[in-house]
Length: 461
Image 1 (cartoon, rainbow, N blue to C red):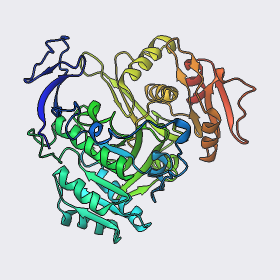
Image 2: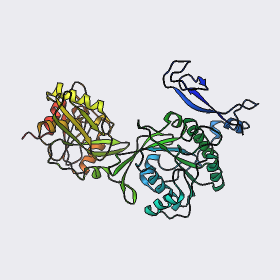
Image 3: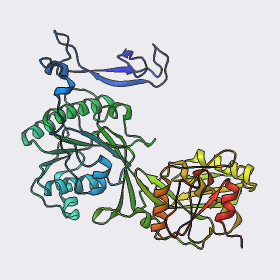
Image 4: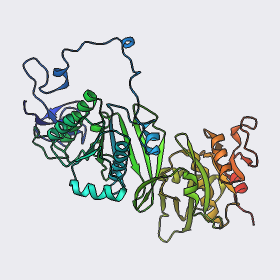
């Protein structure tokens, strides 16, 4: 097979160069030159070893002649993983799993492998970072003893694929893609050219053998999978395992999924015996809450189709130095800056000279604007040193003029609040009085502005 050569290719204009440039000489883009492996073309014009040459004898197929009835998902025994994947593993799919070091990616995938093997599937776990004995120790700790689970400690992609073709497993797991390499490429393992070429070969194997392949990708300091633009467009699904390393809760989130929704999340708790599913996340996130402290509020966020009650905490303190600090954990900092400005200008709270700290309890990261009201109420509660009224939850988006805007799936949020024992919800008046009917025993308090909502939510004593 012809050797590949390494070039630097501009991601903006596809300009190729044998040497690296900080700025593309063709289009002038900075930092766009990426190391890329290029296979030389053969005499018939097809790239040596490429898919185009191998499939040259195939003919196009009419859409109405193609059937998908035979494709069935294989459910993963861990229900939260199946939820995020869209109902189970699709044969021939290529799934990328990313997350911070030590967050639990290998543990979760080994548990999935053990569960699938126990259900009769043949699973190949390629451990490129650890020895087979090290993985066996983790499997013993997790209680995995299936005879259908095979371990293979190898870093050369040609050997990995050869072993997989011989075993013909139902599921193959490669941990991790940054540590495997191709002997046909001269660059080091983990480089862009190696990662892309190895992923392309695993994709060919997955599609040709109808084997589901999971690959683990390391996360960079910026919080994205190393070589994200190179890998994300190649795979069928991208899953991120999120959470604070020193918190027990983990969130599995899909950011791309060709076979299901990207809105679903799975919630896990890291315990000594591995990852444990959290069937009732709302109850877990609120179990240590103290309702008597100022600066604490409960809001209802929706992750996919699942409403989750979370505690948000706010703390204000006189700025010790010149510029006041704004710190957010689990919430977007720019959104916090906007809410502080609205509190100061529209509500009249003198918080411009206050250090403000916001925390979403449990390590959850809240992205939707429906949590705006909860954050604002928590800050106001801390600044006024008055607690939020017992049994009250708040939900709503805050606009720049201080108005409250409606949120989606509101009746689901009300149902979850009522199920967890909350008797009162402060929400935007814009939801419409005749359109939303609160559950029996739940009082719905409608507020037209942020100032009104704070008055309804916080104790006046």
